Amino acid sequence: MSIRVAGTVFGRYIGCQGDRAGVTARRSATSGGNVPPIAGSGTAASARGTRAGDDGGVTALPLIDISGPDPAATAPDIEAACRRYGFFYVTGHGVPAAALDRLDRAARAFFALPPAAKMEIAMVRGGPAWRGYFPVGAELTAGRPDLKEGLYFGTELPDGHPRAGLPLHGRNLFPRQVPGLGPAVLSYLDSLHGVAQKVLRGVAVSLGLDAEYFASGYTAQPTVLFRIFHYPAAPPDTEDWGVGEHTDYGLLTLLAQDGNGGLAVRTPDFTMTVEPLPGWPAQGDPQPYGDYLVAKVARVFPELGLTLPRGA
Image 1 (cartoon, one colour):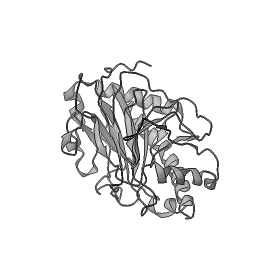
Image 2 (cartoon, rainbow, N blue to C red; image 1 turned 180 degrees about the vertical axis):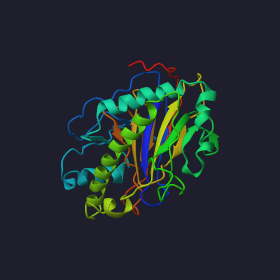
Image 3 (tube, helix red, strand yellow; image 1 turned 120 degrees about the vertical axis):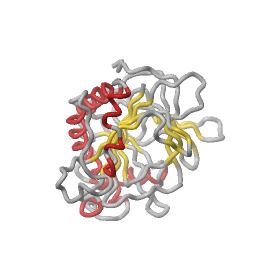
Image 4 (cartoon, rainbow, N blue to C red; image 1 turned 120 degrees about the horizontal axis):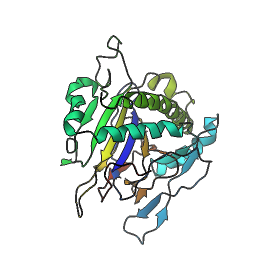
């Protein structure tokens, strides 16, 4: 199996990504998935990319260290990454390795439950809050079912909160059979909030804006959609995909994938297989700003995969 965790920041309103490019997810037969301590800064990562139609040239996604206090220090690298790829790896993010490891274990425990148990928190029960579980085949890309199941969460709001009745807002649905999943999700979400704001400070400076441009308005009270996807093992010679080619909605997506990998990114010039690094990557995927920042197309390809044991 493969587990992928993605948090998307919308800002005040939902924005639709452009058609400039896209993302694919694919399963492999390897296992793993711990997030190690924060790595140092650098300019090249071990992601591979094969240029479409050429002799197999290799490129690499940038690796950007955001641990420093000054967003101007990372703004040039973020600008270059967003203009060319729309994706980049982030180090120095400050998210404890144990936080993602705890979330990963709880998610695997949930996906190992019988179907009837998982359907106790089906998304239909979440109503307009868009929370809960969906089974394999329930989501489609380009009219074809995705070979994945998943969970949707968001910022936890009590029933009396002024925004609780709005679409994509409200209470989360957590499974009673895995009591550790709820605390793990909420703790991880808290960590991601700071990472997202820090990345967006660099984006703002790269656009010639004040570093707090987003945090002071657009993402002061952001709409957050947090998703955990499980890509089951695929049969041999399958033509199904985990997720078809798409661009993410919203302003920014932060993404972590386990050691199985499977993420691919298409730019106007080439397609890249985004390999898991010893640290979790941030998928830049910014909301297009004219023709300046590019929303990249991604997808997940199904391959032979392992079943539920973690293997790490």
